[in-house]
Structures are given as structure tokens and as C-alpha cells.
Length: 103
Image 1 (spheres, one colour):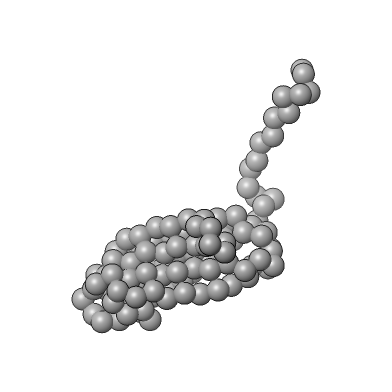
Image 2: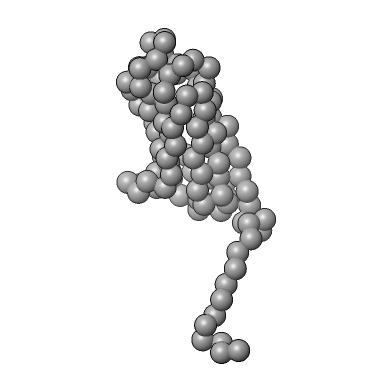
């Protein structure tokens, strides 16, 4: 739960290097935002009414933080859920170009 005009903070580590998606959902009419941090560096942020999502490539064993920020709403507190999914690196397509190869 998070109260009106308050912040809920969670610290976590991830087991594998991957792109992690954090889907935050709630059922009242409150406006809420999610902020994903690596230390003091903001990795991603999103806001909305009912749902929002943040995602980033995270390193195994590192500590990260997610802040859920709530504005005013129809109730004094809001129950929210954070669903986490991961997309392993071997599924993410990458491209590399070596301009020094000359050919």
C-alpha cells in the first residue's frame, strides 16, 4: 500500500543480466508514477492512472531501487501490484559495425 502524496521504495537485486520490465497496477483513480534507479541514476520512469511500466537492462548482483509515487486519489491509501518479467540477453537482438574493418 502507498498513502496519498507518498512514496513507496523497494530495493532489489536481479539474478541474471537481462532486460527487466516492472508493470505497476492499481484499481483506484489515483495518479501514480514509477521510477527505476541504479544508485542515484534514473534508468526509466512512467506514470498513469491504473497502470504504468518501467524497464531497463539490469546487471546480475547489482542493487537497484524502484520508487512508486502516489498523488491524491479517491482513497487515502492505494493497494498496488508490481509484476516483474525478464527478457534474457540471448533473445535481445543487437547489431555491431566495425568501421575500421574496411570492407
